[in-house]
Length: 282
Image (cartoon, rainbow, N blue to C red; front, top):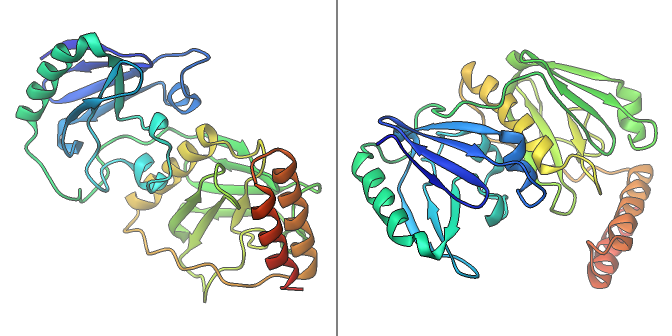
């Protein structure tokens, strides 16, 4: 095809075997798009193509990946807001006819369907790092390191000390968006015995908070780690979190809850209910 379709936050260049997506930089462009910069999506990674009406005089071209084809979307696990979906191209409604043409052309070139047996889209490249609420996470391509902050890390994490996890010792990675309550990043170790501790007490996890571990920093990080893990073998199912808490940890979570409440991210009702649940564990 070799043609280009420009939208509000990205430009899609249609090639014979892939779609090259270049994300714009600007104050209105989602920070995740800016962090990704440019991505090449092989046609074999695309599950399908739709064109639907958008908001306020726009149309949306959507070409989502097949399950398992993109480590970024696999790590996100459906938690991204619609406006932050890197596979959506929003265009002015007057370009609908042109967008429909490209959508038809793209559909005609798709030959694969169903889950992908391997990652087909490249993950963000290491080294990567970001600040969580209780520590600094870094990934050099072969291992993940956590360095705890004295202002946020629980006593359990201080007792365990700073941590380094070779990718070869991991079976998976779990990301709960920082835009959700009690967000975190957890590494799943191959030698783990039993259910993990709460993320704020698990030395293999860092917790997010207001302004810590934002999506545009933590999600590419997790995608890169997940891709490295997958190259070394299949990802194991992530075990359900265990109920373990101690009084110091409960106090820290109540303090964090209060910060979210004061920032307007948690309603009065949600604050009261969650605080009662935490106090009931003492």
